[in-house]
Image (cartoon, rainbow, N blue to C red; front, top):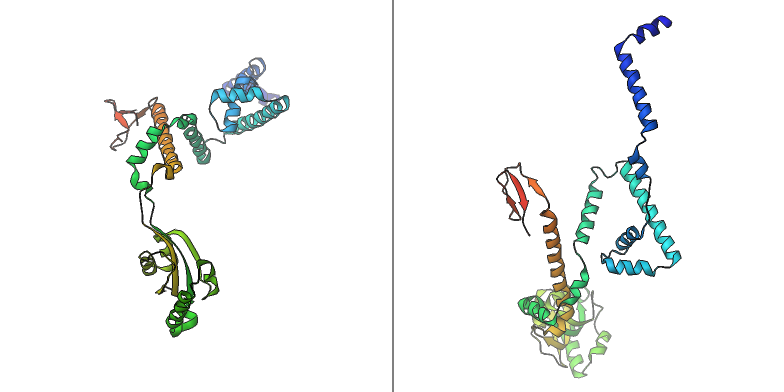
Length: 313
């Protein structure tokens, strides 16, 4: 046994291993890992909690967040601190385990957060003036044309039920409806139950097409509103007697009629512009080395060194 130890002690590799082990132990004892210790410290301060509150509320107006934090009572602040500590601990534990590495879901989520932040302070959108709204409306009038629409009720005769007698039965009923001046509200007393609706109010041709077919809707939109029942008009299901009370042609609305829709569209345009500007600022901080034999997008400019610099989008 001692002989083996003497032989081992004379080996240079053993000396190297022993010295290395002693150095490692000494470093662990006398020079502790400050990074690990630092990662175990969670600092609570108003600035950190205000930032956390912003993310909680999905609002990045710093002044609003400060005011909201100041207005919290003691219990609400304790709850905010508890939420922050819980999330911070879980986040650090996940990072320490390397769970964020090569995770496409986390990557996508982080990108979505940056896109959200890039929207900036949406309060600016509330400052859209009436002049800007009018200008946008006039430039995009074709988007807001109100489609032609009709209002009618109908009496239905099922081809599958009445077979060859369907048209004759509908014609006889038409005479009864007009002779007795059956009103809109009494249509349900005649005919069979239709597969869709009995009454159609302010419906477009596309909607009527989807329920009755093209031929039927084309005829409906040629009728004159009044108290006269029309028909029999054939559809894919049988014959119909129709009482039309309104037939409005397509038209260009005034701004008041579609103001909320126009405002929503303009706000979406402004949001998109804000997002593009914020993205351009971020891209401009980077230099992208291009080692691919691919034509560069117009959003970037190449340097002589083969690098790519971002341009404003």
